[in-house]
Every structure is written in C-alpha cells, then in structure tokens.
Image 1: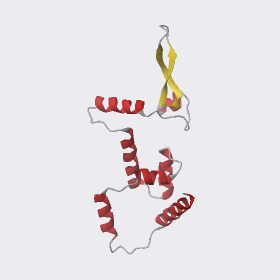
Image 2: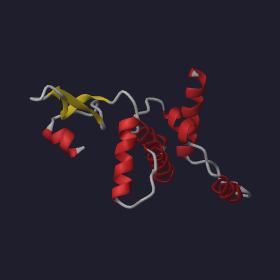
Image 3: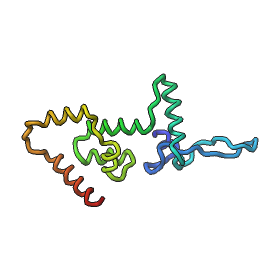
Image 4: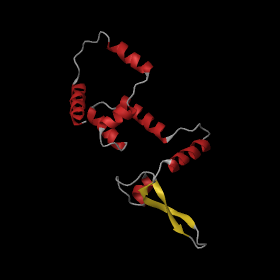
Length: 144
C-alpha cells in the first residue's frame, strides 16, 4: 500500500491489487511493464500471488477469501460500536454493512454455544452500542 500511495501516488479508490500493465517489447512480444491503475478482470491472479507467497513461507495455501473471513472475525472481536464495524466493513470494500454480516458473519457453532450460555440469566439492559446496532440493522432491513 505504501508503494501504491507514495510512489505511484494512487488514492483510496484505486485498486489494492492492480492488474499488470502490458506493453510490446523490443522483440515484438508482450511483456510486463509495471502496474495498471485498474483491478484484475478475475480473481485468478491474486490467488496465484497468494499460492506463491504461502509456498515461499512454507505454509499451506489459504485463498484470499479466507483472509477476508479472518479480517471479519477480527472485526467482530475488536469493533466496539456499530460505527467502528461499519468503518471496518467499508475498508473491506463493502458499501453496505449487511454485506459483511451476511457474507462473513456466521458464528461457529462452538462460539455460538458459548455466547448463548453466557447470555442465560444475564438480565442487564442492552447498552447504547447494541441499541444503535439494532436501529441500523432495522433501517437496512427496510431497504432490502
């Protein structure tokens, strides 16, 4: 990101994983000539980058989508308000926070059981953050 922002002077709307810029070389054949300020037309190239990086590190391959799963799981632990979660969601490229919730928001069964067990007998009123989240979700449900 530092290279894209500081060297190429790209902004937040430009692709994080840009396509390769191609040109015709001296031998009249196509060759890589830097980065194009547009995204790849498919996810294949980024998957290949991930495969090589994991192999180089001696790790088993995980897809880019699994990285997003991990980032959303981290958000669920770190975000303390709906606004923070919305910002995190936008950082993943989602214009709607419900995309993040519905595409990545499933809670593993073991964690679900722990959460429900901890809620039993807990009669505390919901805090302001939960009230705010409920209001936001209700607003998005009306739009869908």
